[in-house]
View 1 (cartoon, helix red, strand yellow):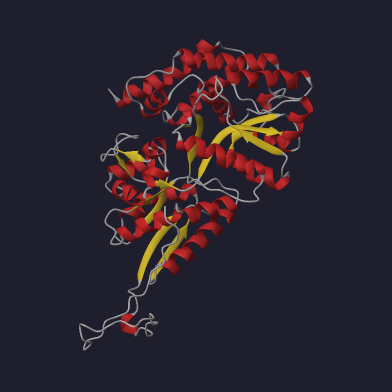
View 2 (cartoon, rainbow, N blue to C red):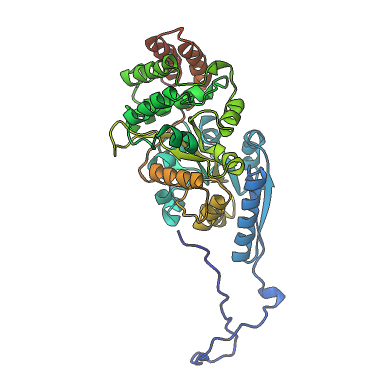
Length: 445
């Protein structure tokens, strides 16, 4: 994607000049245009959820530069929370004077409903024109795609473009690794050997607090991804081809989690520890590793620069490829019927440009586009490299709780029993499958 494209003022031809006039050897600055010659003023209305101070600062910088590069264009921006956008988007995009561009949550309840109501522009032609389809992996494109009736996620047309990324992997304490003589593992077997080595050294191998149920989901998925492929996971998340949760790979992943509980690889009494408390403990030096997402990097770097590193859960065999759970920000979409559709597409392109990626990276936020940074904390460099690898190889896995409207509650409850050793891995899988099978029946009666 090109960096800033600066408009060149064209020298106006004046009536009365002879057609054969020879231009001056040295280009002259044009005369100051009259009021009638000023560029036509256009207002582009944008709704976004970039409300936290860091995101807001980046957005304001990009908007100012966009306006400077597009004479006559004024961005009328309105920010709101995620929940406010969910409640206001449909009504706003239904109005003739609604936002030209809005940041929309992916999934059936938001983007799917807007597509079904014929309120969003198909961005597929713009993706090809501006190269967004090359910047985003096929898996990320699919998450922002629906059939035109809004009934099927994961295929059809592109309706949104995300700007930032997140990924789940292993954060590690460099001091503990050095003390125990452990290096970053290249295979899952080496990872498990490191767990045992930390345990023997009196260091908690995995800092863990599962009072907030999503923690179990993330760790399970990182083990699950060792033995499943994209075809299965896509079918499962998108409800295609009658796949089931009750497969050997999922039973094995559940069994592995129970094995780690029995071996004492997690923080003692982890079920009563909240995520924020667990994170604070990890930052203070408790635990060799923590399996979580890139969203913790800013605080980790600010509070303990240079102390932590990051790696993706290693594959079964060195050099092998495996998915890792990840995602993106909500996506910029264009209101169908806007008179400024092309300008709106240019705005989205600006927000995912190389310049934008650089600004996000400078603030410690992983952009969807590939970027190189100088003088960054090594932890952030690790994250950028990991995301680039996942995105370029189409290895960004899904969050499992997207599978059904009730899946999160079901799997969290089942994990509580699994991790307390109250049910078998087979029983865990069967409980989760019951939820999924019931949902498929509602979609395919």
